[in-house]
Length: 74
Image (cartoon, rainbow, N blue to C red; front, side, top):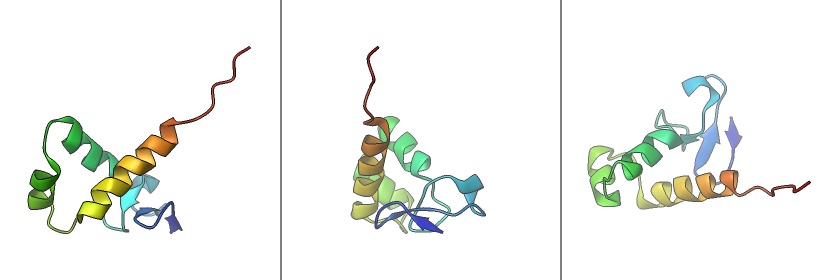
């Protein structure tokens, strides 16, 4: 298992190797999809009681870092 930060993990044998929260079968994209569909963090934590507020923050931070890459202009 690879730790991408203190809460986001990647295990090739779990969820097709997609980033998950703390080794659980809750994919980072599941959390981001819920946020983008309008659920509040409180609602997500109610629906997924295994998650913690810090997990939601870690998902957003990870996604932000993944899309923040340099653009090379030719």
